[in-house]
Image 1: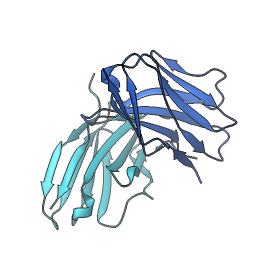
Image 2: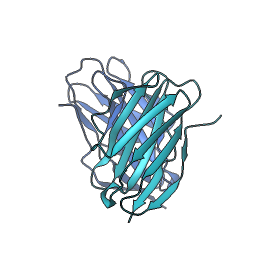
Image 3: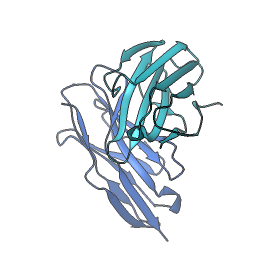
Image 4: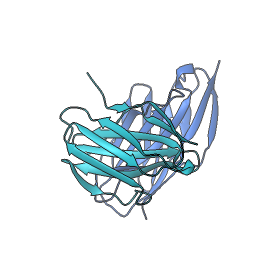
Length: 112
Length: 114
């Protein structure tokens, strides 16, 4: 039974580069969420989609961040250009309707 | 504003003892749900237990139980008979008002020793 699949698991990039994080939700789930986890700020909701439509992107830090969900089985979170303060663990989660959310294993992003 | 507060940054317990992790919340929504997640050192987020605001009984899942006190706006997680594998970060969360996302507390690190 496949869970939420995120790739890559680790990403190291230089400041100014574009970074794309990928997520495959659990089949049949209709809601998808992107979270960011840092020591200072904890787990923050960045954006979530219902039926592939963005519902709440108020947590997206700035215009450098963008997220898409072109179909029910795939989503991307893009940072362009990346900055050292973007270093964090980025989680994707999915659900069928209301919570609980099922999380992927996260992508650890390091921007140098 | 909606808020989850976990005041214990770290807790220490010996194997086989019970431990309570505190969580208080604030919301203006009359219908809400509270959740606990476990994050071991490997990093994944594991859903443990759920309590609905209208549930008459406290939720239980194996060794996990939720001590829900609505008037006090608290939803403490109780782990009975702690095991070494319970060492992890624990997060309390509630459903976002008017949405389906979760907002999380800052977490409590639990360390279980032998």
